[in-house]
Length: 362
Ligand SMILES: [Zn+2]
Ligand SMILES: [Zn+2]
Image (cartoon, rainbow, N blue to C red):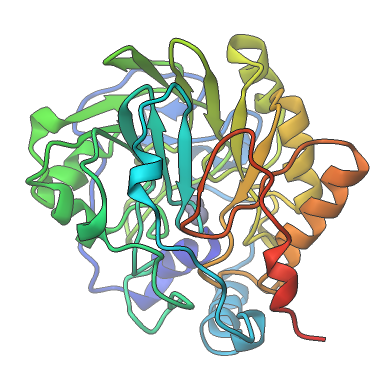
């Protein structure tokens, strides 16, 4: 989600404290400008220096914010969505099969080779205020009901991917955070011990218990407050077990980076790819369903799960437009898409169902 983050940068949240990025002095790279201390997406160089040449102006942003915050109720589900309370005994079986649970939006839990890995854990707030982008219905499981988590991967610091309450919950647990460059400072402010955090630049790797985690490029932006636009990095993740390879896109616009990731790491047994909260006004930062399906093909995904939908209305499309369109396109192209019910335990061999069709406005 990006437009909101840009809007708060302008004026509305002037009481926000600045959240500086990493204090480390970083060398210039194809995605970091040390002069201004900001990251940018290669190929989208207008993002460099925090400048934007073609993004909506202040009043346009304010108008978008107003419509998103107050006039967007028609884009939420007209019924309670089906959810499954996760069956942890199934999830935690050590029988050589990797298992997954989708909690809605981009929160994913994995059980890989005996390790529990959580991606972008957000259980409640996806914004700084309870009235803004409220979750449609509770998460299928509470934080307290989760099995012990070994590793937490964060894609970037937007509110719908990095939740303060969740970070504080895990701050006294054993979970080790692996995060893109610049995010450790925020986590330590919330009480996560520094030795429980590893920061990685794109294509850097952290290994634990035989699983290799690599930060890979995404085309996006970052920021939570007034003065931290693009001061921390955003990323996707490649996860390699001794037997399998998995890919999570993070938040991203469509670009050639998916093909590059396939060349370096693919193909993948399963990919989790952003599919939702898109709009022509922020097409650089989020993908349409057609681009999501193309990204799955580019990345060499044997199957993909569309994520970044199902819990919050942060764009103007209807709540189930992303999955309805990605499903039709994937079927046309004979690309396997898995659409699990939130909370259900699934594997790369699962199918999922068209459960979102049962909750559609005519
Ligand atoms: Zn997002
Ligand atoms: Zn984002």
